Length: 235
Length: 259
Image (cartoon, rainbow over the protein chains, first blue to last red):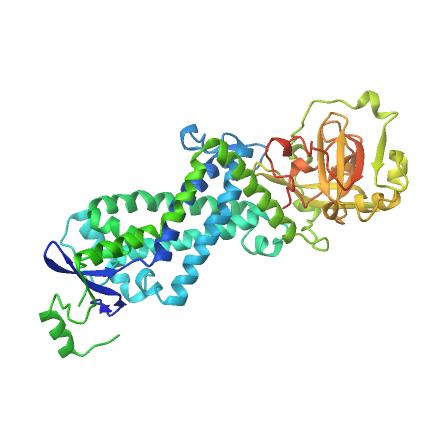
């Protein structure tokens, strides 16, 4: 075990590589990596099929008169038609829900949430990271695997995921869960929130991929093996 | 985890402090990495979804599982929300998603509902016989598979009352509906017996128009719109569904279609 500068304990080993001794920390336990990649696939399918479904009625208003907001390009739609898209959507909804549930339960039970969830005292660390990434200021010191901006991003995706699952369940079963449907503002509001959750993911993903590209192989490889070579956040 | 300033300093001096860590040699490191990425191999099974002939079957199974789960959520006692007259969508704004432009006009005179299958009293029933059963009026939500919804005013008799009237076998599992315009669908018996599932002959207090399914349609707020078949021709109570389960359902929509 090793300790991060912020005081989190993290599993670590010292290993010989090309003649020198290097430190490896276990940033991503198996379940986190497994659900990460499963979610990546699921989100791709859910977005493509979801857009195909939305294209059947691309509006949040009345059916008569119908005001279409977009015509979703065929290239990003999955399923061919509404029926095919619903089959994709209702198959992967279960995978997405299960893996998301497993992930969230894992975070809570093992305490791994401390590494992922943004905590109030870290909020003031967000702005310096923004200044670093967008205004080319010096990189603030790294205290643990994720900096505050990353934690904000990952915490947001968990919120998007929970929103997507709950609103999805309510679009699937608005009558059986009528009380919750009413509580959240009705079918139209819920359908909008479901769409908004997707927009949240669509806002997150390009930034996420760009950061992965910028931070190189060692960082990317850690989401496959779980181990990060020579992290800069240990005490 | 707080730490005294002294300890903190020691750690900072000793930046690459590897003394307390388990050691691996080069081979051990490689083995550990290999073991870790191999634990992700089950995800390769997802590759099956990239093969069109395979994914077609898989996603149909997925939808069938969804239908299975939907039946578990369903309760015959749980009523769909009802709305005040003020909340009802104006009649002109109630969409018409017709299967055909079938005009029942010529046949209305002699129209009778054919009832067959597992019933004690099969035969043909006139609209007058159906209307003689207790009338139920309800303002309920009509949800389309496309994503829109409206609140409509529907009246008719409970399908449950009618099925009792014709002596339907309570052990039966399904009710098949076929229509004068060749549309067809089928229900699980529990949904058919739901107290808000109507044999509907009026909308907005007026006899059904041709666009809304004259002279008699099914309407239920517990299923998606495509299950509320118009221009009823026959009902068949059965334990075994025909291979044609529904016009849209056979093309890929959920058979259960519950909401």
